[in-house]
Length: 117
Image (cartoon, rainbow, N blue to C red; front, side, top):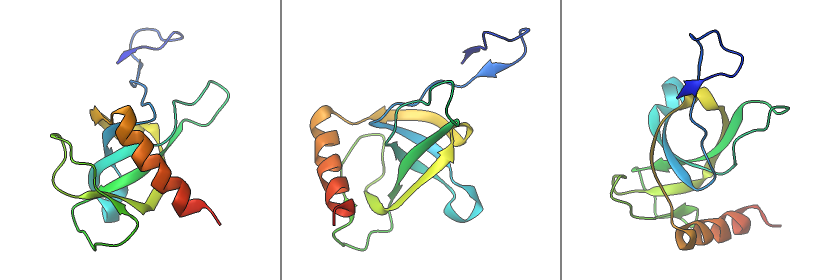
């Protein structure tokens, strides 16, 4: 965290979350706190302070929309391409790690497949 440039010393800004990073995220009462893959870069000053994320789940159903990317900071499970939503960046609690460029490419190919006609 760093001090906001317009701060009088008491207000702090959150660290920025970047595409390809995995953050522990508070998704509300029903969805709980869980790891999420960030799909968007930090917003600019003229944008809403939001991030689009893909949930990581350990309740696997072995369907085509689950993509398993084993990482030491994640429990066994998968990112679920039907569990994508946009959250306020204050819901991103702490960075757990990030995907390699090869892992991101593999995820993104499946993401495009999910949303193509």
